[in-house]
Image (cartoon, rainbow, N blue to C red; front, side, top):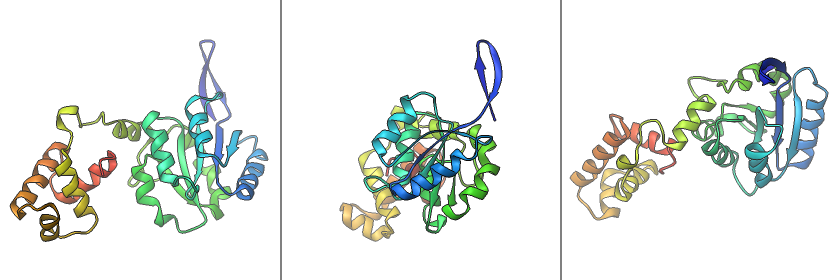
Length: 227
């Protein structure tokens, strides 16, 4: 259940869920099951369209509490869709789902601002357990996934990055090359600079991002959508 303010009074209402899956058959199966769980949730809509999902999450009424997101959406990845929504709003909470190994998507999905991921085989069993947490914007795995409000702030760049501290193009390039597995020698060669200059770019980028080493700088730059 969730608390909503109605005419000056708090009332408990059923959580509102929505689903996006590019597989029409899978979407229909999930929707049919959700509709048999009226005590757990109300289903607002289901779609195979990324554009419709983004629009309805941000603008449609009633507002959605939890969005179930398939990881393979055709025109866009699941993490890509989540990041697009989360940059605009702290709602809804987003739960990834996949028929493959969830580990394949865990890191990207966490950085995209989602609150967790489940294998499709266990969604029907696990979802009722996690609805109360997700409705509050909470994380299914606090050590891995952010809560919705923190993710929104981070993706908007409101935590520690201000305009004057934005990474330069060269600083982003250095971190991007390292993130692709290039060595310092390779980075220097590609950018036609010395190794010491590479180290200087990394040091400046880390300072701007408020971290202490290259690995942390890469991780945080990815989180902010800079890489």
